[in-house]
Length: 114
Image (tube, rainbow, N blue to C red; front, side, top):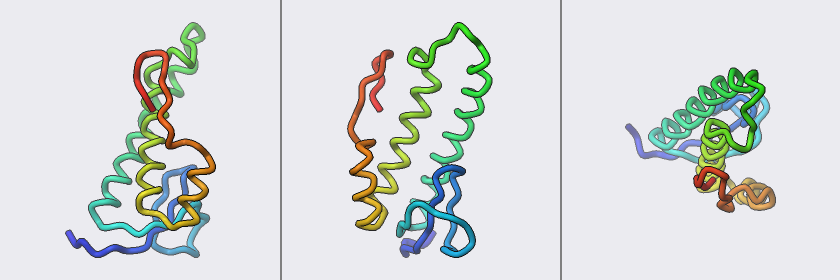
């Protein structure tokens, strides 16, 4: 695959990655290689599949959110997505992510960090 960087536009709510800035709304602009986009797509896909698991788990009333490893996995994956967008993004995007404070490690009740 090519190591040339191309511009991509990321829409976080649905994990959309496009090269056409006019085709849909977007949150972040990045420049990435083909391999980096494949990795970002894998993170979005994994986060989506965990989200489906969480949907079904949400219907089990005795499981609390803060003791749920699937929710922790989704939070960790979302942080990895933001880390990747931060590394590949524009200065404006990096400032926005910094303002969110999402890149600071946070301990969970089950010992994982995200």
